[in-house]
Image (cartoon, rainbow, N blue to C red; front, side):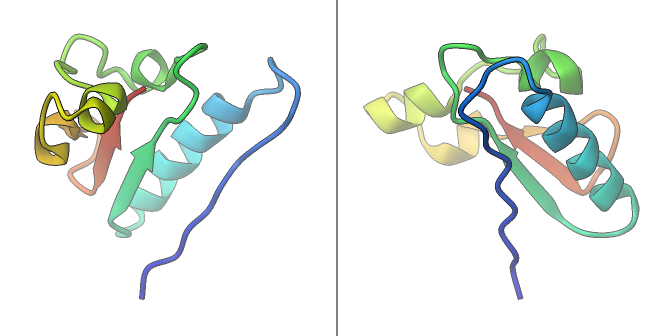
Length: 88
């Protein structure tokens, strides 16, 4: 059964993206299938932290605008086969 973990705070610069990225990586290396998506389009950083910034062609904005299917916006992590990321 799927579980959803959300990391949120009203203040910027508290390490939310760092915690989310490394938690997702740790869970994926332990065998869980993980889908990590970033919703902060203004201060995006998960693509940089996770090392996929050069691999990401589309992002969640393209999906929401109808510019591409969600499958095209998902990037497989170079660090774990079980981690799939949709950047903002």
